[in-house]
Length: 92
Image (cartoon, rainbow, N blue to C red; front, top):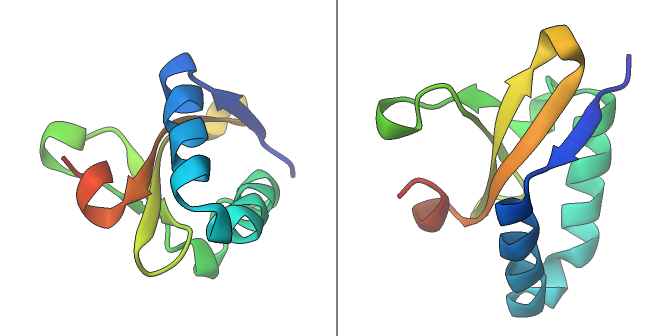
């Protein structure tokens, strides 16, 4: 089963800034999004739900230091990308 990735306008701005700051992660980031589309529960994404002020969102890993926060709507086969950045930046 394949999922649709939805890009919030605020996410697109953050992703553009992230890409400029971290060109070395371009390929890793692209592969993460492709894997997310195919299987959001793949072990290498380390999908987990968030708590506190980010309750209702989930996080996946680009690598050890960088994360994406996502809104995961399995029933609609849609995944809304919310934020991208360092572990510390995403969880603020």
